[in-house]
Image 1 (cartoon, rainbow, N blue to C red):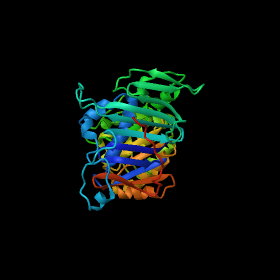
Image 2 (image 1 turned 180 degrees about the horizontal axis):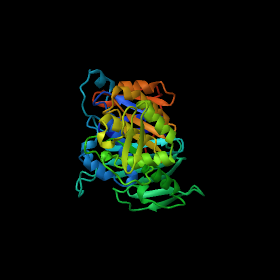
Image 3 (image 1 turned 180 degrees about the vertical axis):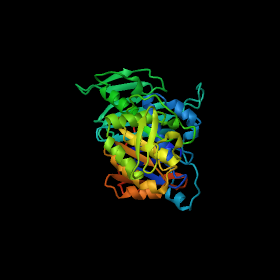
Image 4 (image 1 turned 90 degrees about the horizontal axis):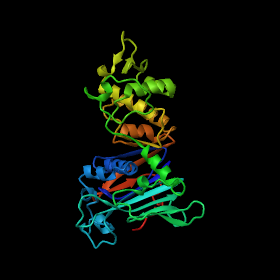
Length: 382
């Protein structure tokens, strides 16, 4: 489980450390930085998929994603006694992403390319580090990348050896190294990050993929766009926790049942003489069914991230959604990004829930919560 997420230099996230629990709800007003935090998590997942450069390109390239304010914001600046202005930098310009858990931690430092680079908008990977335990240190570091060189600590002797001497600046050591002996932890980290799951655009419009008939086949996890909804439901009912799925549907729609039949979603409701198919369901009903299927899939990812799951839902469905989220958090770690106060309130009383409130101060995203902000985080130096 990831216990802390650290982000520096990315959009409004000048320098932030966020504690994560089994079920974390990230909330705040519009423009507070919720979407930036969500995208930072996706960028970390893209590192393991080898898509980091392409993902930043879709955001306009490295320069457009960097923090646009001063390197540091003094108390006088925050209080309005001194104008906000740039000062002489003490460190290089960069975008840094990292996370840590009880067993492993990882960080990556992205910098600007040289002025004469062929692709001036692409970042260069300056430093990467992989360590055991929560806080990076000399004794628990076992894989590092500096510039083009990658070093690994031998598991048997503790000695360092060179893994790469000329790794291209756009390739991560997480995706490039495949040594099953000294690089086993790198392989484990890569596979773990590759299985992070994100849902941020579950369409429910009339042309949504979830409304179309599908070929029924074994589907242990719902696709990001919900295109295999019927097959995923059928898989849950046949090989997963069918009782939890039926309970979640009953909780939201008393007397109703949902199944995947002949490649189509079928909903039976009390009082109706025939079942309703996916094309006949309201947007909110279909979205709730999509969320049930995503959260209760037999394949359990290390972390599952939902972006504004309350969209299109009637307020009466927020309490059942909160119950669904708490049930699913017993299976895997869940991060929910939401601006729905009723949903946050429904989740706040749960023992596993951790509320992370974001706010803006001088253009910078700041974190408010009951957790200790003094958690020590160490970035690898260039």
